[in-house]
Length: 231
Image (cartoon, rainbow, N blue to C red):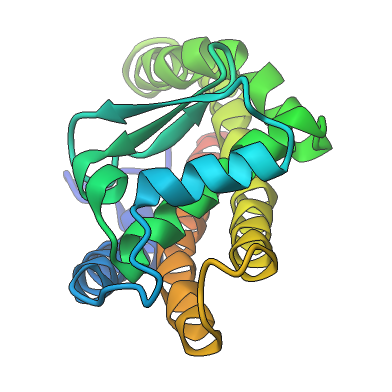
């Protein structure tokens, strides 16, 4: 018999509360920090696109194109097409936030060019995770309400999604480190702006930490529920 839930209340939900609070804080922090430094112009006056192009070219990545993408904070590097996609605020913006985000995404392009192992490993997980992340919930729900043996399969599949979130952390931290290094080495920001740039990138990093923490806590919760079934 399952030990959870009792009378419509699942006490294991308490396990998720720290992750939920951290996710809320991270989202608030990244929005407020980005908005703050979006209003602070960079001393050199370069746009995000210009900064990205300069860093790419100086790292021998002339073959990486830069495009505008819709949305806000939707900036990303696409390793399949070798294209850097920047949101409107970042592409045209001359703020500290704009050039910091642009440099971060270039950091991923440099990782790709250098075959940075955590990035290569994460990319190899993408097709597996795309399937396992959605299918895991199917098996978990069936395990809860119909066929208990399927819960183990669901947990195993969900573990793949958790692994992806964990591997993402060094990838993002390293991209931010490369971004600061490139901005300073190429004289694209001043000493004072370096501190502000780090604040922008550190705030963004919190969202990945929150995602990983939430995934790990959810996995722990599933394991506890699964073990309670056998008690």
